[in-house]
Length: 418
Figure 1 (cartoon, rainbow, N blue to C red):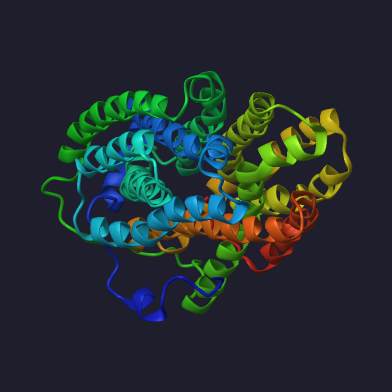
Figure 2: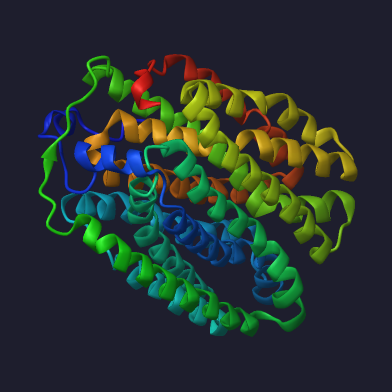
């Protein structure tokens, strides 16, 4: 899992990027960010991740309706996230060679049908297929939308990535609220109502595709000259492996809260299902706010310092969480969400700058790894919770941010790339 994600041969291949040429980058920096496009792609990310987070938010309903154990709950997460993890790097590699302006709206169609199938599923196998379809929509969405955000950044790459991530994080936080207000009172069939969100996203993404197409049409691939102080191939490989490990520590911890926090609160404090979903919303909303600040701070001070602070800085609070009361847990979850989520944009942009000639593939790998680690971790943690307890899982996960010490092996990037 923590091996370098790109071969040394790939690093030595010709450096070709069809749409992010130096001339285009200079032109974009001169005119500044395309705020309307950034807002549109961020809002689409909001809609996309709202629908994704809905799956985890209805776990208590599915668990009761179909008598599922925690391991089966984890398998639903795995089916959804493994689909996205497996396909995102492949799609990113393909779009590196040939941009696909309208692929985003087509991919959102998979999410549309996945939600409709989930609303009528009456067997565990059908639930897994529906979750996998939603994951497939995510696999198509993330690599190319990250490329559009960078193209619209005007040279403020961390800021653009944070705006993009902000939409997704707030979308993730909305799932529990919508589940509490709609799915819990009206039941599983009400999930079909959320397909209207997917349809809205399809329309917006089609319009963004109309803007995107002339940006890349007729542009010839150009060789990108790396900065003289850019790390050599060996250091790039080490840095990519470290970034994967750091993403592991962050995403697995967030996954433990996202998938099982509701059950933890119900089990430890006797909170109702609806009440627990609102506590989960508080954590995810804090996660969204923290996501935004990581990018601009990385632009100003350097991404390495943001990564250090974000992952390792959350450690004292994650260690305290298992021993806190209900109010203390809510407060600590907010602090943890604010701190640990700021690493997301910094990690992704750092990886993109290490390999600017493989932008789509690297974006797909890191978005995919995030999903894959979350899915695999949810399955493993669910199995562990069945054999021990939810409380034991949270005691164990509290130590995950300590992996942030690996940030010491990240290279210093040229100032021009920050």
